[in-house]
Image (cartoon, rainbow, N blue to C red):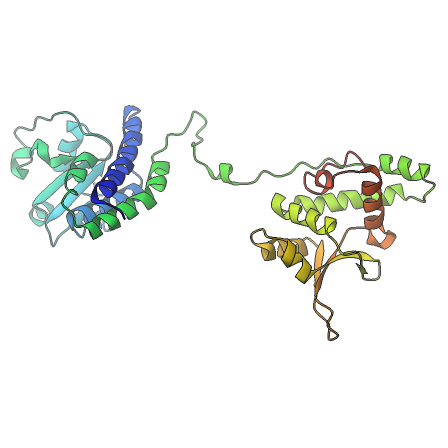
Length: 339
């Protein structure tokens, strides 16, 4: 069971992580705040204070004064990464009489850490009755969640936990090349680099076995097989290798192509999203489905190698088997240098 102390500690830790990242941006004078960060601050404040703040910038783009407002409650916030007194003054200077009357409770929320102290004398501070206590950071927000009911703490902790990663990504600092630490590039599987073969090694082997061999056709089939596999994710290529390795003893089709029973496949394969991999292999023309017949024959998958017209699939497997090669090398890493 989650305790109040655990939930409050989780919220404080998550917000402290965000504040630390914002402080680093501030040291580099990077004070721009992404809309998602403003929306995050709005949701945290709404949950912590029981407000109904909305994003005022959606009404007036880049509102120079206030970012968030709840007219019914009379509360409004400027959300900024700039902790300076100059930023406070600039904000108040840009708030007109109408907004001041509409929002008697105005606060500056610093995403990061506010200054140790502020001195506000004269105008515009006197008009607003603005004091240093009205500049907040996440520490001030955390101080106001201590008395929240447990259900409200659960809601706030869940929201902050879900959104922390995205907010911290928005606050990341690019390197000198403009690249961010978190990038979609880190989430994309690299394209394979096939290593093809002219089938010279296969020719030497089959000549020694006095077996007829079409080197030119075989080289073309290797290139075509590599091209079809290269378009697939690595895990899907792993599935193709598995299908070939665990194929049925029976063959299928006019060219005696390999096959594997669908019930057998689903009994022995326990990976995720098998149907997705099978669909990709069909799209790559490496697999086709055959439905159960009316005589009790179960459905099966027919495995297609290029060059089946001159039995490339049989030659390929014979060569691999006789030399004890691992199918992972050609069918997954796409290295055909042994061929």
